[in-house]
Length: 304
Image (cartoon, rainbow, N blue to C red):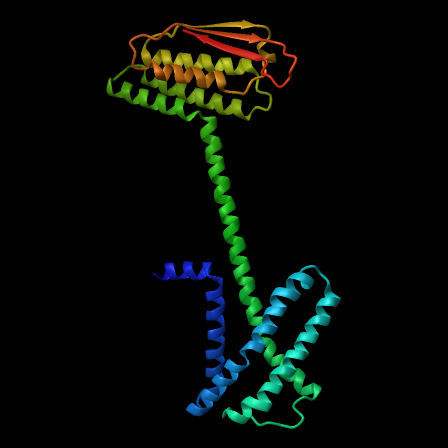
């Protein structure tokens, strides 16, 4: 329950601000009137309630105008000038409202003096009132840090998910699942070639991942992977697939997206896994020259 309430509070910015100012009014009312009469408590409650617009305006101007537009951009002279203007101006407003209205109508125990607007009194009052600005900025900084930390965690989580996706792409999940299913079946049948199948599957996965990490992915390397896949299928089915390669030109000059041939062969073996015999497969690889360089420079024609 507490977690749900905190989650709602974290997402509801107006509610957070409302709770902050309610806590400030009630908290300082309690501090000022602690151990005194009920009338004094109501007097200070009225003081903080009536002066609340002044404190809110002062605080938000500093937190959402001066800090982001001047302080964070290191415009120190401009920030200091406007900060002092707001500091002095809102202190004067608070003293006028307090001495001319609140202290005369509400029993707070404060004494009204004729020289309350002298610069020394204004500065002393402003320093005391500045406390709420600093508390608000501290709370805002904690919230900004929390948001940044959560954002960093989300980015790390997204990066981790992407790494998992990349890793799954590298290991060819269909081939891996097919091999695992076949090995499970071999175990149930007590096949003597289970160890060979497991070793060759591990070797093939390792070779596939190394191939993905290579910057210059030569097509001859992919043909080697396909041959390893054929060897694995031969162990699993106890039947050597009849696969022939017809290569015209230099295979290392073939420019085509990696793992296309490997994935195609894996899907073919999967399609015919329940058949008694595999069809004869002829793969023609033709290195061609095209006028348009955007076209692939290889044509793969598997024939059954």
